[in-house]
Image (cartoon, rainbow, N blue to C red):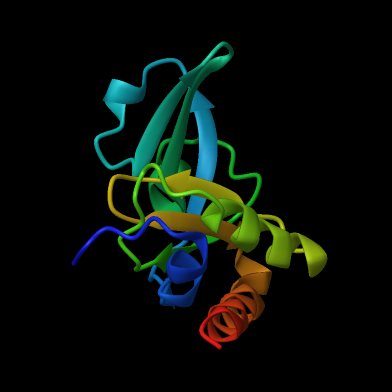
Length: 132
């Protein structure tokens, strides 16, 4: 799959899919102690870890918000401009919170579990509109 960097092409090709699982963000002192984390990021206040809810609960960590993951299957270039803004914008217009994680090949959107299906539908509509 070739990298896509042009804004309209990234949106038209994003092919969003709702992934299985339930996730939460937690703050811990040492992210290395969480090999089951989907991701970690060091912040001033500690290490943010993105964990499956069951893993957080098993460790006694607070689960403030349960999130679902929507993966955008377009291979977006790291230098691509506009995909995150378009996704966040359409979800913001619907009042749906989103947390974006850009990885090497794909972008991932974490949305509240209760609105995951709606978020997916709105992203598919955004993709359809960009393909016209």
